[in-house]
Amino acid sequence: MGKSFLFILELMVIILNGKERSVNGQKTIAGLLEDLGQDAGRVVVEHNGRIVTGDGLKTARLQEGDVLEVVRLVGGG
Amino acid sequence: MDERMAKPLVIAGREIKSRLMMGTGKFSSPQVMAEALEASGAEIVTVALRRVEFGNPQDDIISQIDQQRYLLLPNTSGARDAQEAVRIARLARAASGWDWLKLEVTPEPNYLLPDPIETLKAAEILVKEGFVVLPYINADPVLAKRLQDAGCAAVMPLGSPIGSGRGIKTAEQIEIIVQQATVPVVVDAGLGLPSHVCQAFELGADAVLVNTAVAVAQDPVAMARSFRLAVESAAEAIAAGPMGQSGAASASSPLTGFLR
Image (cartoon, rainbow over the protein chains, first blue to last red):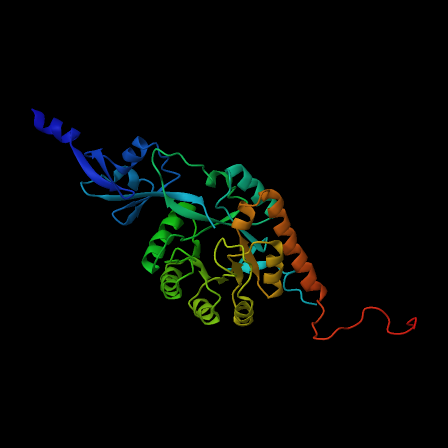
C-alpha cells in the first residue's frame, strides 16, 4: 500500500534564495509561494535560471535540486 | 537666451516632467519616502531588486509608489559583471512590467565605482533585448560616447562616489560628456546638497539623480523640496543668461565722483 502514500509525502531539497529548503514532493511553485505567505503578484520567480510568470507558476512542479530565486522590488538608488 | 532647461526633458521619446530623479533607498519609512517623493516633484524614481527574506517581513516600499504618477526605474545594483547585470535586468523587467533600466555594474565595494567594460557589454546585450538602458558610469567621455553609440537612452556619469555627498568632483569630464552627447546626461551619485545640483545644470547636465542626500537628511521632506527648488533655480538662472567670468575686478559702483 504505502508506496504511493510515501511518494506524496516525500521530501525533496531545493535551493531557495541561496539556501537549502525541504519541500513536499510534487509541489508547484504557486503552492510553495502560498506556503511561504508570498503574493505571487508582488514577487518574481526564477526557476533554474528561467523567469516563470502567471499561469506558469501553477504548472511548474518543483524537482529535487531545483534552484529557485524569489525576488521583489525594494527601495534603491 | 539659453532655453535648454525650459524645454521638457525627453528620454527615449518620452517627455519627463521633472529633471530631478529620486532614489528610494535608505528612507526611515515608506511614508517618509512617499512624502519626500511628493515634495521633490520627481517623476522618475529608482528602485532595486532583492531576494525576498522569508520570515522577515520588510517594509513594502513599492506599494507606496503610485505607479500612475511615477515611472519606476529599476537598477541592477549588486551586479558585479555583465552577466549578473543582464540577469537582474530581466528579473527587474518582469517585476516592474516595463523595460526602463538603470544599468549599474559595481564590482568593488569600497567606492562602488562602475566597471566600464562590463557596463558596455551588458548595455549592448540589453539594448538588443529592447531595454531602455540608462547606464551609471564614471565621468568618462569616451565611454559615454560608446554607450550612446550602443543605443543607450541616456548616460549617468557620477559626480563622486555613491552616497558620499561630496558633490561634483568630475566637472571637467562632465562638460566634455555634455558637449558630445546626443542623449540626455543625468548626473548621478555624490550629489549631497542643492548647490551640487545647481552646479550639475550649470555644467550642462539635462537631469540629476539624488537619493542619500534626501533620505538621510534630518528632515527628508524639506530636503526634497530644497532639491526641487535647486532645479528650478538653476533653470531660471540658465534661461536668464549668466554673466561671464573674468580674472580681474570690474567695479559695481561708479568710477567717477569719488570724495578725495
